[in-house]
Image (cartoon, rainbow over all chains, first blue to last red; front, side, top):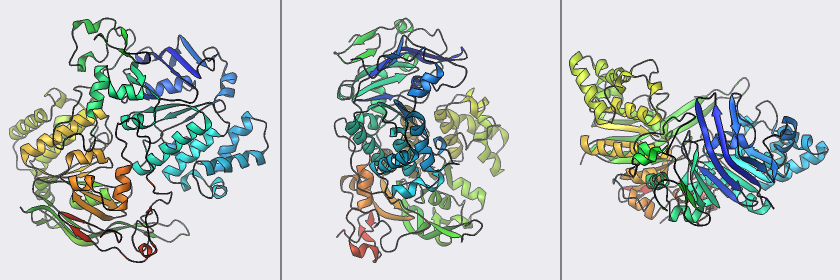
Length: 318
Length: 316
């Protein structure tokens, strides 16, 4: 059986000037949580949007392979993609206030997608909405259905978004920074909920985040992105125990960990900033910030294997 | 050691208009807050959004007037000082370097502004001080000629720090200074703030929702909940032995990059705090996992600890 989502050599450019994603490859298996992690501008959100075919106008998407359950998404018509989107594959976003429609009640937004994709009555759709709201930990779900998004707190809105994404029983859920706008206590609650749902429903979850703490706690597999490339990919425990790419190593040293990093001692940091990369860029994009860099880093970089499920993009030997 | 910041019984409420038919509501942002920060210390203030941490920052900066209570910095009442004197003593660094820098002004002019506003420095002196400060925070002279939009987020935060320090104040109030930044840049800025504090012997009030960051920079930590400090302890004590159930929940929700631990159950339930409707008794009781009946009636007294205290009925 083919993997749930296969992405190979994904390229996204904007107007021929900016190369946002450069040859990213990864797969999401059924029932696993795959995290795309990286800093702002690394192309992780663009990658997610291009899987859903939701890229802004002016963006160009190419891929060696882009398949959902073995079905090629590249040549799919708009209407065929619309039948998949929100149905078989669903997405939740960072800011639930801007992705919920302020003019409609929670109930009408939640049932709309289900009624569109599946032949069900409003009554059945409402029952399912009540059921799912309860499932995501919302008390008095019947009451919430009649409310508008502005009447809910940030945590409740994100729960509504999650419930809404699950209405059509998707096989793949893409979550783009789902807890970044939330307080830490609410973040922990929402992530716990996502992890439980993922396990109970056997979802494939593609989680996009900048937070290595979230990655460590929730991911099965991790792909680290930098300047549009997947620079390292590994099973979670392996990546944290044995990071191979200098960028991954640097990133892990930057995170203060209570009890581990000594107070008042400098944190590890990565000098400089992420470069702007145009099409036709050669060599390693991290070389200007890397302490191991030499002149060979300006040439094509090999992908090394560090075990059966661990690879990284660096000239340094495995 | 004398106190750099002294806050006594400060209360601040805001009136929120209730709309066409609704009644006005009073939001309590700071409710009888008292503390002091020693010279050269770093007090970290943590809490969820809406707990009053930014209001506290604005009160200490003299940007807001408290309803009651008194705030002194370096022994002088904040509101009794004129703006110029205050600017020489205490300066802010805000969260969003995109919003807090004038987009139409050159970087060197932004950093020069506090000096110009004093009206006592000559042009050559200002130029020299600005160049020195820019260099100190890691910006080149050439970058001083640019506009904020031409710099990255981390560079902009360096500009904000340079502007805050160019008058050589004694105290810097940092309100979520790294929250808008990527982790690799956050580390650069935290390291810079730590170096500058040692070099200029500064006192920081450091506000953040990120407990791992606070643990790294602060000498003492105050946990704020609905306008009150519910626990305050030296950093090591607070992280090793948090006493207040809210502090414990906050610490439990820190997701350290350690695989295999899963996502913790913080046990707080769904009722979110509403600063316009503060619960009677202990204000945390509706969310507290160990609350007893008396917690909804009795107001918890401050139980003193070395270098702080805890406000919970259930701790000894």
